[in-house]
Image (tube, rainbow, N blue to C red; front, side, top):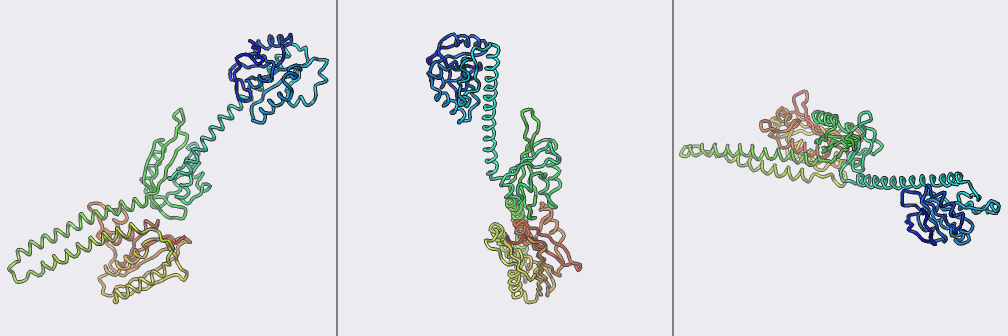
Length: 498
């Protein structure tokens, strides 16, 4: 089993002296003679033996090096020290060196040698003792190699996980992980986009269930669907109303999927969150506008067609003016309706947050002055706070103008009364109320605003939808109610500027 090298023999190379085969290798760095033969015979029963006589052999792969004084003389102790130092400086696994010395010269081994050798054996030595001591060193070596291999694998795994975590952290969508083995399936990871989307930092979100983002406007059927699919360990995708930390509501596309191990057991749930508020507003706006174009315009055209027929029958009579008047008004209404649709679409599409917050109280005072000139018979009063109310809601002036004009236009009283009040409900929120003494908004209009349009149930007032879209896009809330006298209360709850 031995190979004599000077350096000779097929010895494989490895990093930091590590043997690349399964069988441990022992390098005998010593000259030919009886001692080397006995060592080869004894150690060769358990290990692969390599023999060499010069320092070149120290660059090969082995698991233990045994050398004597002659090996030191031929190799140079500095060379052996360099090999040991190199292995230690590179952080390589333990590599044992054994020095053999005659018993009568053991006392002459200097203390410095113990910095570079792991054992000193006096010759002659019993075979059992030799095998035991060398085997202990080799087992330490093999354990060290195995630990280093595992450490490298762990480092690679950690590096891969860190890469994946960085990718998740920097993803353009919100990403969360939950632990279903813990009570209430809490989140154990949230990425940066999730934090930006919701306003909750990781420390505030981790340990809580996804449901903590839900609120009063979150659809119960959507909540139920989420619970059922997660309980069944099945993927689910929903559009859901959630709330940011500052209380602003927003639409979110939420995709949740189970993460299974190699045995198919669900270990985590991963969630992907994307804000779709603009998309939802646009979809609803398009449904309403499409309905207006397909229903209202069709009705107006039918009215025109009918009166044209009547006009034809009346030709030759003394007074065809009534039908002509109806046709004229219907045509005007038709053109005004088309213009309203275009104007609303333009306003909502461009209603982005203002670069600089505007003082809400100043805007209301300006609007009151405009309406007093436009409707001299109307009475407008305001109740404004002393402190400024800065808001960044794009289109807020348009929404207020529409609310005030509706209150005046739809009041049959020749001297309508409108009150505008502003109240800071919370530190970051303001409520604007427009109260009139008119007949109130028809119940059907309110139902449509709250539940959405259907082919059989739709609103006739585009102005209410315009207010709703502007406020909703800002993350606020639009509501209507009645006064004790049957008048209308329109409330716009919007966030203050940052």
